[in-house]
Length: 444
Image 1 (cartoon, rainbow, N blue to C red):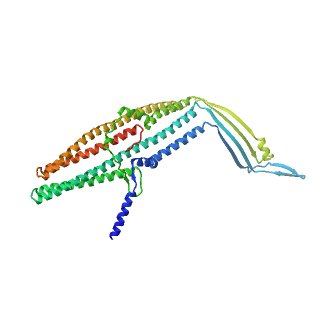
Image 2: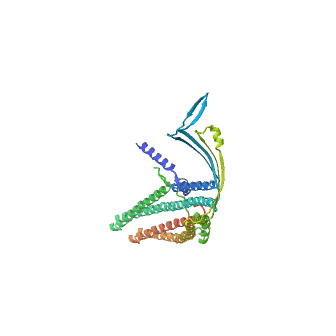
Image 3: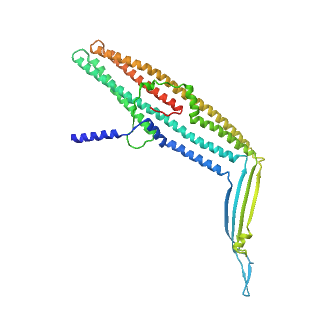
């Protein structure tokens, strides 16, 4: 039985060690390759490419072939075709007859006020905008992944702090039991130490639950639906990372104006509005087109053979057409006004996106600056509270401090440690997001 238990333990250990641990880079790469929203955006890009190709093909002439085969019937036909064969006169009345026609037609819009060429440019812009939309979606997903990933790192280290606190609580409880045994502590004071130990155990369970929830959210964001367990790699983070220099907000914003796809997309919207305005104004201009065709026909009632009818009935035509709009029920005027309105909306949209970008960067910059200052303060506070608690613990064991002072000192130390962790990881996250908005890759 012991051998079986040992084998199972070894197998579980092997499985645990073989489990993939996802780094931040792994998560970002996997999301870019597998996210459904991104794949949908890529399909829209393919659709935009097809629109562009179709508009380019519309610049070329069109050519079509046609044929029509029909059978007719004239039930009251009395006269027909008379032939003489070997001195015999034969009269044939054809009540049913057959018609055939064959044609080849071509047309080409030579000029329509620039609508066709501007439509090609417009569809090229739409193709570029589809690319930028993919980048926007990818950026949004990567930002969410980074936020969840840092939360997981924070909760992982926070659990270690709670476990250290629990170890201390257990030692205090054991010391209290000894002191109760020799009459140096009341059972009421021991109960407080026991309650503190139980509270630390509860804090660990709660923190582990939050950690599991963050991992679940990250797994769902990555759209991993298989039943395999999911866990992340916990890189070693140093205090120096959180204390690194924070770039100026102006520097980040100026870089983001060039790098961020939502800004470039908004600018292309304005260019698109200019082209749509030109296309709308072309409705007031003439359209010049060229047409041509070849055709022939056959009829079973004819005395000529099929080949002779094809030659005899053959005709060719070519034409030049000009269409000049005079009154169109205000269609063009309405289209021009709407295009102008759409262009103004695009300009306002660009300003709005620039303001939102500045607001977002300002928020991350303030978070980085504030949390970095908190972290510097927390480093000193943790060191001070640790020294204070160590002294309190020694004095408590000597009977110089009471239970309330010991518990208060421990709570202060735990709070200081948690504040240090939170400010550390929030600083690192904000720093990475600022780099991300500058066009750099996030690395933790």
